[in-house]
Amino acid sequence: MSKLKFPTFFKEIPTLQEWSKIFRYRNAAPRITLANPSIAELGAQNLNLPNVNKMTAVELYPGIGVWSKALKDLGFKRIIALEPQVQYHHWIDTMDTGPSKVIEAVKKDGYDWETYTILKEPEYLGLFENKDWSEVHPDIFFTGTLPKGSRGEQLLAQFCTCVVNKMAMHSMGRIQMGFWIPDILYKKFVALPKDHTRCKMSVISEACAELELVCSTAAEDMYPNSIYHLVKIVPLEKTQWDVFEYVLKHLFVMQKKPLKHMVK
Image (tube, rainbow, N blue to C red):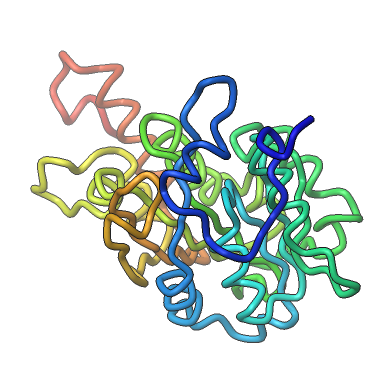
């Protein structure tokens, strides 16, 4: 295969035009990726994570690895970069080839449930499983760049539900997260009561986690140009989501009955 089809990492960030050509796969435009090292460095520093030299980051959709490198430079012990797209994967796989390799490319998709079963194996995160939710997990950080559109929204909604149900990544403990979220999805995610964009995901996120806006990009910081926001998400130790879900289900199932008969 040619280098055009399987690009090897080089230090200079490709231009937008080069990126579009190099990472195009089967005539499909490449998936969006962070492309400005300066905003990545700012975001990494502003996360204010303690003891990163002891932490493993699980990163979804690293793309050209700008966020991966910022996390490495911050001092993370290990970065497991989940990248299913073949061009991006080859790029990430050739990004960190030194003797003390930190960034490890894994050709898996964070959208697939099977991926989280694999991550629980001893060679990845299995040895760090911690069922104690009285404190935030000290050894694992879950991060990445969410795709635009319905796929990104489904992922974010699932991650919130997983906090409540202690599934997927959160079956391994109370793991803090930091995601680059597209602007439209971000507004829905943090929408407050009476905001017309508020939805079930907004309610779940408010009920299960503390949210903090870390930083925002300019449009040109992303390929293709788009505004994204880095949001830090710290799961709460306890939630009352099961009570809310019980009420919500009854409201939908018994819509024609008076409220006093729906909820007892």
